[in-house]
Image: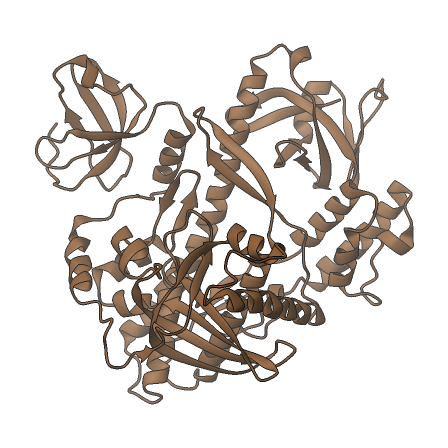
Length: 587
């Protein structure tokens, strides 16, 4: 078979003998065949390889060895149609932008004198945001610079159409699938340390309590002084000497970030925003070829930095909402409905029932929605002496929330307590960010141009669809990665005799009529225990109520009940390949 395309592509080695057969991992790119002289040049079957294009494609390099976690990640991306490579036809547009980036455009406000810094994960290269904060009388002035992606990714361009197709960037263990080509997302548009960059700058004036009383948006030219990581800034805050950045031009700004961040957090508490005790999973591809899974608590600096981002998105949304009466403005909002009255009533009943089942104090563990705000109840759970019960109650509070979504009509965002919200802060990682920037700039440039064309309205609808689709896909990918971690872990255990398989402790987080949700202590991930599987592994029937599952007679005393908020020990008993689920036996 001859590959006619000249583009590089990624494939999997499916057969090797005298030659090599490569199956493309992307359905939009055909498979190819490569013949090597000498067996030493043939990668093992199952390897993921980068191929050169042309009539005689060849293996350029192996990018993931066979049967490893990294290869599994590439296969997962391919299963959902995600391609790490970009079409060659985009190269000319990228080159044109690199040749004329518009850094010295006369309409740009010159803010290069301000000591902006970026604060992100250590490995991040697509730097969307930079900030600088200074005192302004008894209050503060916050300069929040966002990469000016909409200037480069015009709605009429092939780059925009490719970004629309992808919807967003996706981050998998050992593999980033950017929405924009790397020469842009990690180069020309990224707010790289020391480089002059175009930016959309939110200049927000805050009073002494951190409330925003004025915002203006400017297209500007900035230069970030330093690429900082969250741990670096946290260390600077925590050390009494503050020697790392104390003498730098941005040191004072970093200290003000902490001050402003806590003021904004206090304001969120006044607005009854629920602050859940979330522990983040950090899953990576390990040196041994498998997955490594760790947990980490969010740093103080992450929470404070997030507050500035949320404020920016809220202020930008207000601008768009105010301009909705103008026909040419086509805004997109992020709407998050509050929990339904039925959900709140059910949660109230759940806490009362768990008080009875666990024999704990009603004054501490039950919630009365007429007497106490939900945020206050969730906040005090962390101070109680039953961590498993607290984890289960908080988990039930989380699951009664509804999902947020992109919408053309403004609406409240319950999760952050804002009357209106839009996504300005990720313009290189979300197609909605590019479009939102475009609409804001059009509004600021001319408040009353001609009516929008049918194409404008169609494009907005496509952006909304792509934004919602990509959010759903990201959730699916995260679940698939956790499933891959569990598959690798339990596969090894299933090969051992039953009596030698390890017992794993966990917490029963919740029940449905047909299954239980359990969070393991190690690794700290959620699994599902299906009650039909319990019947097949134990040979007994199980009685289910909303808060407890118990094996029924005869001879059921040796089997533990599954009570919401209680500990459970279990081990792997089997695997249902057809349903892609593991079967567990409680002990």
